[in-house]
Length: 436
Ligand code: SAJ
Image 1 (cartoon, rainbow, N blue to C red):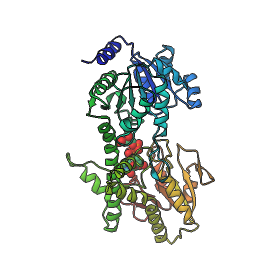
Image 2 (tube, helix red, strand yellow):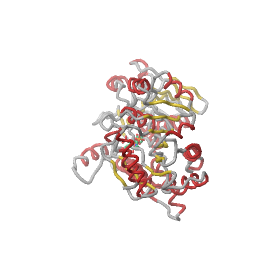
Image 3 (cartoon, protein in one colour):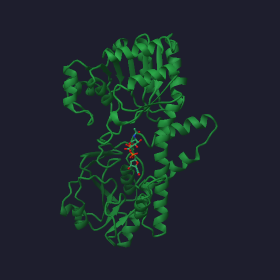
Image 4 (cartoon, helix red, strand yellow):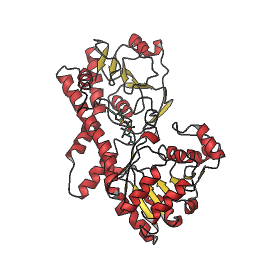
């Protein structure tokens, strides 16, 4: 057993291990508190002043982190948050959980990762373990991060150890809290991987070592590319089934009875959020640098990207069947966020549906219990409060995201026409409800 492994085991056993977490968002903040709850000393680095202010007021801004837990860890001195990277000099393990967005032309943007690593390297404690959790393309840890440490005259395996471990946080998922989600980890060396395994075993029931950081990076991208491809497939089959007068929802439900070899995906107005639209494009971009064009990722992305306009075309056809033209039609879009009961507008296809309806001359309003206001290309929209009279006013109500707290019975009773892209109204409501 390596000296470093003996050392980390000793520190863990004595609860002397000091943990640093860069980025206190929906990934870093729950992780930081998990280690603090195990009575380790955890320091969060956060550059967002508003977040630091919330923490100073002992108020959590992430639903998976109860303020009570935050208060206890702060009061016990097991957790502190700062914008000052110099505290990294006291940390035995540093987790990097910063955003990896897309730049224009769908190019990966790892500037947040590189900035964080540069700042960490300046203050890194000798022998520290650094683990990147931010989703990124295969090769980032080895090809982009190692050179930064080298520039700071830090030698891997001596001055520090480096791993990648994909984040798998599922915000709001009570069935799978952090400690129940198996953790994949792959290091630049076996010694690094072993340290990563030892570290995550503190809080996570099952830790899965892989042969390299590159393999670990690819695991995460496979997981989310798998979702993109299958959502693209079911979106295309939904369009096909409509032509063939087959109820795609009934077909998926029946196929889902197969106890093996099938996993249900459901059609919708497109794919939003901060993971699924982006992660596969990181893989697509890296593959291209090897001269490999992933046709599946391109095709699925194109099918999905066309869904908002397809939905709008179906709404137009449904209106026409009732003798109403799209131009000037009063349309209410229900659900502005990208996913049921999640308050997140990032890349929400509902917004694309609203923009597409407006481009066809419809007068569009929206209702969403989680989103009181919407800023759309300079237009400020206020969420409509649903009532019998209000619902009656619209020529068509489009269900784009199916929040559970909406009264769909009321909608069915008072709406003239409903286009349901989420199968809220299972079954046949001829003439009143059109489904995707
Ligand atoms: N969507 C469909 N049909 C489906 C599933 C999703 O149209 O069958 C749409 C959703 O409406 C949404 C988008 O795709 O607009 C993304 O939905 P998602 O369920 O994949 O949720 P996300 O974006 O929150 O993905 C995250 C990912 N988690 C991590 O990367 C750690 C993903 O790997 C998880 O599988 C997913 O949460 C989850 O299952 O909740």
